[in-house]
Image (spheres, rainbow over the protein chains, first blue to last red):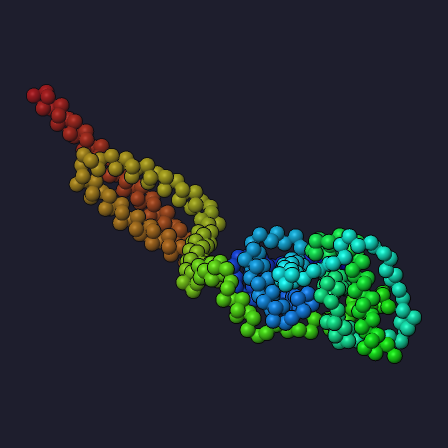
Length: 192
Length: 187
């Protein structure tokens, strides 16, 4: 979110008027907003819930939720960020229903997890498709934190709030997740 | 690797959003939209109905027509600047019109007591007045405005004279009546 929020400070929502029309009850404006944001939001939901059918359910509910309470949306942030918050919260609620132990390391000592640099960095050929594949192999808790941080752009403070954990836990969990991800990538022979 | 992974994802962010929502997802959402999006009244308020547009167009045309007519009238009046044709006549015109005005109100005072007489006198004046109005309307388009204006002044002059005579007739008539009364009293 760091990048997003910086943009936020500079640019006003280019779809501001569309949201105003939507507030006034225009179904057409709602459809436009759906068209603009559905794809990105589906991917957000998918990365959290890890299942396309459930991600679509989340998306449907999130849009209905958004259109239902758009009148109360004061537009002090963009519709995109506001909607993303709804999508993320609903996705996480779904995980909670599955009784996932999101973070099993509360209270654990923050033993230092070195943010190591890998010697073979230069030879590592990263490919988006492979990184995505590797992310799917991560345990759900790890995937969640790494998605929120690296892809959805939330910082650790925000992730802490979303997941109801401390900022430090989020940071530790993220480092572990990243280490795990690199391991998977290596195992898959991405490094030569 | 650590920072590399971050910057790699940042650079290739779009490639991580590869899933497309299924085509029928919107229709599923549409079915469950809150009621405020399905009230036709609100829609109508936003898009103007044909009838409303026609009514607005009609009133715009009407207003334009009226203002054009008013404009034409004003310009016509402006064209007939009597002082520009002949300042002397213009002054006379004002003089006579005000004289006629006062004389006609004097004449009106007998309308109650002598309705027959008033009717007679008034019709004479009305005839002349309509001639005057005709001249006045010709004035705007006349090639010789001074002549028309002169005729108008003559008309007013005659009107004044006729009115004066009528008033003196009335005065004589009234005197006669008084004398008759006195005569009766004297007898």
